[in-house]
Length: 467
Image 1 (cartoon, rainbow, N blue to C red):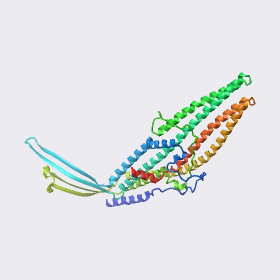
Image 2 (image 1 turned 180 degrees about the horizontal axis):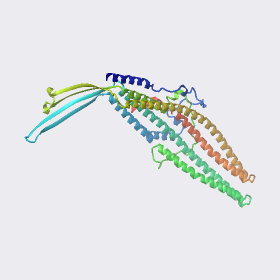
Image 3 (image 1 turned 120 degrees about the vertical axis):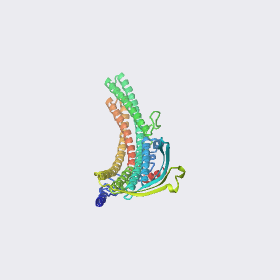
């Protein structure tokens, strides 16, 4: 038996050497690039500020973000997960402390014939403590604390996503309203041309074909407006949902994207990004928890050592229950070593090691995705700035072409097809410009988000301290 236990201990030590891992390790040298591939703004500050959404210069957006930070349901759910994780930390910490219990009892026994009875009373205080010699319980505490940190980082990730979604959805709502206004102006222009065409047909200057074509154009403009109005309702509903409130009675006062700024920001070194993304820090905390779980699973191969003691007394009368002559105590120690468990401990260790490998791969994936997000966002900002400039020129020239074509048509110099073509070009150019402006604003939001939105680990630590 002695040699059997010794061999088990040697096997456990060998397994512990194989399973030993370093928290946060495992990144390949190629995982962290030296610099970014996409163009970096040279006239922007490095890293976002904590209130980055204020740089869009919209007081209404600022108010919406504040409302979302206090009322968003996803944020509230993330906060409850932190409360659950805090309770798990307290529960795991309790295993490092002794348990104390107080027991009392009273009984009476006797016979009916002949009549006789006896009474007895007892009271005892007991304590037990598991010696955490192999670090299993402390590893459980470490895992619980790391899981708590992961929950805190998860809340910060949700908060950043919510704020970004509010800004993006708000801009989308204003963009749809711009497009509705454009469609209505184009409809008025088309109706004006229709009146001219009707007058020319009545005067015999134009043919009925031109009238039919313009009526079809007017109908097409009218048909476009209801679909845009439905988009406006859907976007407004999505924004209300982000604020944690029903859409009924909800609205925003702004009606256009005009006046909004499109700020930009520059990233620091790629290696610095890892400390500025709460989702990456969450994956790292999960890796720390996985390492601690391996330590706990490894400790299961070793014997458990417990200390126990009790003191109490028993008496036939309560008054003499605490008499020294009736009080006794016990002190003991126990050791429990599993000799054969059908491979359960080994299976648990294998499972925990595999889970750690999965967590490590998730961590690497989060890191690589973070680098990719920034490069893509930087490229999008640069390309969409160029697209917006070109769309503005296109819309301006389309407006001028329509003005000239309509004037020449009124004078009878230009045919109707030129006017019709100019109308369509103007409608398309103005709508594309509104969409280009929206894409540019949303690209800025995305860049602020993928750079961490001004988040730092100190903010999470301070919030945890306040709670």
